[in-house]
Image (cartoon, rainbow, N blue to C red; front, side, top):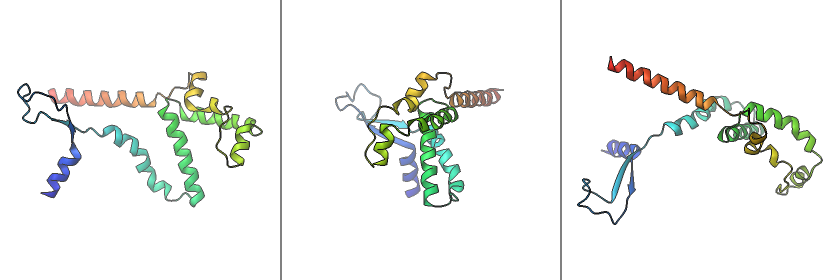
Length: 160
């Protein structure tokens, strides 16, 4: 019984609907509740890279290496979330950062203060993409098309 309850709780989300709904106008015997099936494919795809990397992250070399790996993953995922090709963005940022060493932002960071300088804002992924539009992250679109083609082929085979 516990297994059945756990299965139902993980596969169905129950949302509270409009309280003023007329029970006679709805074929649903419980008009105040709407049942929605949870589709977690997108969430699973987002966690996939981290889950695959757990075995690799076991040997980062220590606490400092783990922190550095976390920062790098954060930068790459931030670029992807903003639709920027991570390699090109990081390459440009790492080549341009030394030019800012004498600026206000580095002085604030060195003093342990929050960085409030606008000089590094142009290096943020969304603003960087505005000046470099040819480096749009297209891998997600390609993968989505490949998954759709695979699903279409699977459906075609079922019909035959």
